[in-house]
Amino acid sequence: MNGKVIVITSGKGGVGKTTATASIGAALALEGKQVAVVDMDIGLRNLDVVMGLENRIVFNVVDAIKGKCKIKQAAIKDRRIDSLYLFPASQSDNKDVLTPDSMVRFCKELRKEFDYILLDCPAGIERGFENSVAPADEALVICTPEVSSVRDADRVIGLLLSKSITPRLIVNRIIPEMVERGDMLSHQDVVDVLSIELIGLVEMDDQVVIATNTGISPVLQKGSKAGEAFKRIAQRLNGRKDIPIEVPQVNKSIWKKIGQKLGLG
Amino acid sequence: MQTNDAPSARLIGIREGLLLTLKPETPLENLKTEIERVFQQAGNLARNAKVVIDWGNDLEYPELEQEIAAFLVDSFQVAMVLRHQEPPKESLAKDRQPRRYDITRSWQRSDALILAGRIRSGQNIEGRHHVVILGDVNPGAEIRAGGDIIVLGTLGGVALAGQPENEEAFVFAMDFKPLQIQIGRVIAIGTGPSMTKTPEIAFVQNGLITVVSYANENPFAKYPYPMIR
Image (tube, rainbow over all chains, first blue to last red; front, side, top):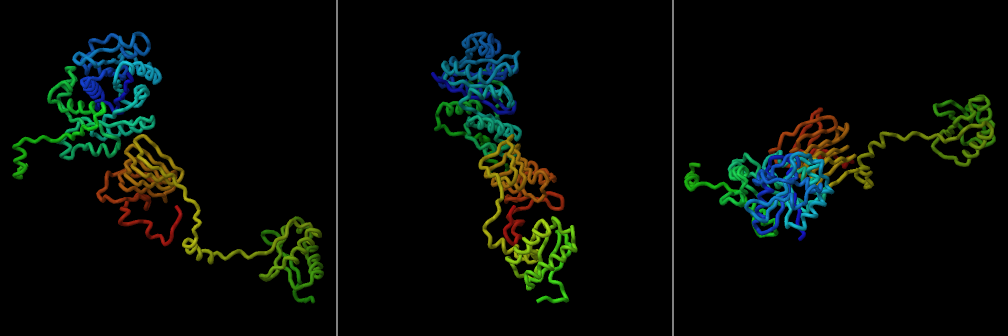
């Protein structure tokens, strides 16, 4: 097996990297792939909490890289999806304990066991970013429709391009009602500035907050718009180029539609 | 033939050295005696001096000049001998200037750094002279130029033209919405996207940065002939 290493990054914090990593990882595993998700945010680990696996951590990714345990011992199997494994971050170290070279070696080992290795990159463009990007074959840049997020994503895209990685874009947390009112950047505005290939649009979804707190991935919840969007992104990553990118729409009730027709809206 | 009223050689001091005025029609032997006479009067002043020969008219006498130059160097140890030349008239040259722009094709070079592609946040472009960007400049990017900045795309970042202190420089963009503009030492902050939706140009006017629509009032259209920037 020769797995693919995909880094999920954004530059700015709090735009949904960790949620996206967990969701895309779960969706890829549901497609029948062997998937590893690695929390690269050494010192501020979150991915284990989002996946509901924090109480099972014995060894972490730093232990595995430093040789304190076997790689298999650091992998935590997901509660519901059999082919999904988590490598949690260490909470007591900082980003300097790892080097880009050690990450390249670690991922070389993981490639033998998994189809997809998703690296959850920390915010910022310092050591943690460099560690995460060094072994990556592909990159997904997460961006929300806010000016500050677009600015940071632009910087990160520049850095990735300089490392010969052509990233693809996910626009997260779109609120169609605000876009329609003109209070939020549309995904088209974001793509115009960043000018990279779009791989998915994710709508703002309350289910994600619930999923994060309960540790049950949104892709496992029926009717979660974000979950469906992440599933489509996973399918596209998996080579299904025929799946169209769905633009989140305002769903109006039938009475509102009639009202608008009559000029009451 | 020798006339008595005016001597055939005269020596006066000028800024560059000594001006020797000679009458070209005088035979060489007579000239030499006359020169000898005036130089003896000058005495040590002539030693190592720069001597300028003036024939009193516009004609040239190359052989005579060589002969006298050799004689002066041999006999009086002068440093060098030159021919008197009228300085060119400046007013004439000025009149010809505009026409020269029309006819000449051998422009002196105008240096520009030309880049194609998108300039992203955090990327800094620095050019010693003009900078031309064929593409967009995203917010957070910075362009610094010694001369003008021309963006054939959207300018969303910071543009510093005419650095450090050339206030003649301009900034041009197809879609002009920079975060900040600096021309020479004059700074202006961006005011967001313009309503005109036309290419715009910024330059310094009365110590302030002025932005005008390039389509409506092209500031270069008033030049009568092409100029190098």
